[in-house]
Length: 298
Image 1 (cartoon, rainbow, N blue to C red):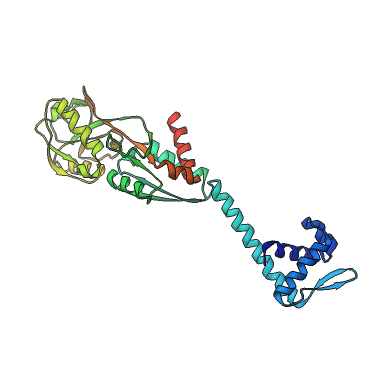
Image 2: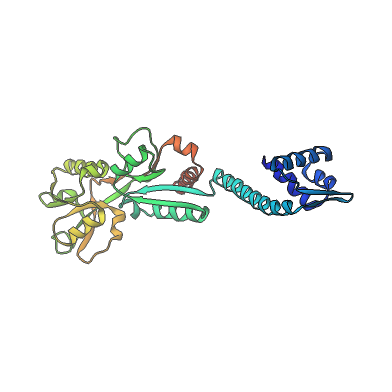
């Protein structure tokens, strides 16, 4: 039994006439009659009583009609679902991000506009550090991720790079620098420093250490924290000072002050990363990448 047999049966049942049904489905009347006879033979029962005026359903035909209509509705729905998925209008997008990336205004704007453009796409978000995001991308557990990239980022990944973001000094409110709007990195020499572990992502870590060395001193890292917001909280507790992306200044706590950096300024590098082969096979991912390119072009 094929779908065309069900559609032929439905046409005859609704038209009550083989000639009109044949015209409706686009075949001749004799072939249509043969197809219906073959269907009846397969089912082992008559579906129609032939009359001089056309055809009427038997009791078995009436029962079969109810199920045929349900099957064809399901088939049409399945076909429409497949077409929508092929156009990227439905499906599932697995998107990762670092905690610090979420502070960059382009990131929530991109996610918001994506949801507005394709509301039927299920968006599965995962927050972790860059090292974890890279593993998930390479293992196929994420479709795309906002990462802090560096020269060690896998070359297999396609990167849509965001504008470099300057960093800020963050100090406790009672710190000797707190009354200043700006200060050079060298002013932090000898200070207890709070930073995230290098294993969480070497891009920001190495950038901060390198620029501090260029400023003439080495950091004394006395405390590690997993996220930028955690770093700011530890600074508020007067456990040390730190350097964070400028967008982290959105974390406004009573016990901290943010200062612009004079002279050598480390930058935070952010990119939307994806495997090219995944983008080729995933319409929902292609939509995200295209929208990201539009945002970055503004």
